Each structure stands twice: as C-alpha cells, then as structure tokens.
Length: 132
Image (cartoon, rainbow, N blue to C red; front, side):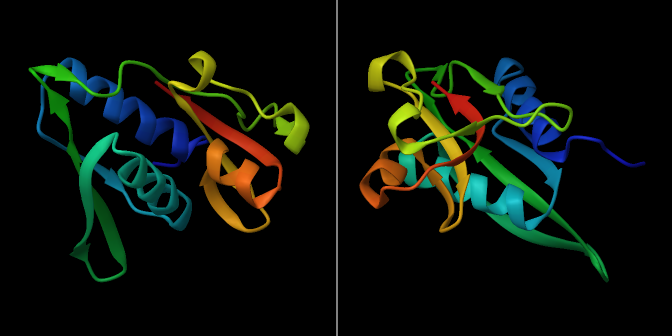
C-alpha cells in the first residue's frame, strides 16, 4: 500500500489514537516522521517514541501519547503543506499558532524544527504542520 502523504497519515494516527484514549500508536518509520516526532517530544506534546524492527528492512514507530489530567495534550494537529500544495514561509512570515501557545513544525535547510527554533536560527522553510 502506498501513501501519497505519509506525514499526514502519521498525524491522523496520532489524532485518532488520542480520541480513542490509546496510550500507544504505531506508524511506519521514515526519517521525516522521526524528525517530526523528535520535535514533538522536545516540545512536550508526546511522551516519547521508539523505532522497532518489524522484519528485516521494515521499521515502525511506536509513539507514546501524552495526557494531562485525563485530557490529550495535543488538542489540534493538522497538516499545512500537502503534496498537492507546498507552503513555504520566510523568517518574517512564520506563522504563530494561537499567539505562541502552539507550534508550527518546519522543514528548513538546517533540519526539521519548531517555529521558535527557526526564529532563533533565523531560517525559514516549508511549514509541515501546526500543533496546539
């Protein structure tokens, strides 16, 4: 089965898993997905993740979801730049999610990072998704 938007698939798995109050969700592994999960972990939106070997040459990500007082930490997550329409942003035009309460995740020349890190590094890039 091929996916046209693997990152969007992972974000949907996280969204659906939190609605179902699951503690762990699984997703196929890739470098981009791993980098996005690293940003989510660093910013405190997920408890953690690990890469598991399903069979030789096939890996999956085990994502541990995070809850606070019974409510999911991630209230909203949606894809901004899609395969049919890429959205790029200059450093001056980086979007603020809920006036800084949420984050945007960007793919920059220096790697995948949050909007706060991108402003500190003074780089723009492709806006992958917004998380609140």
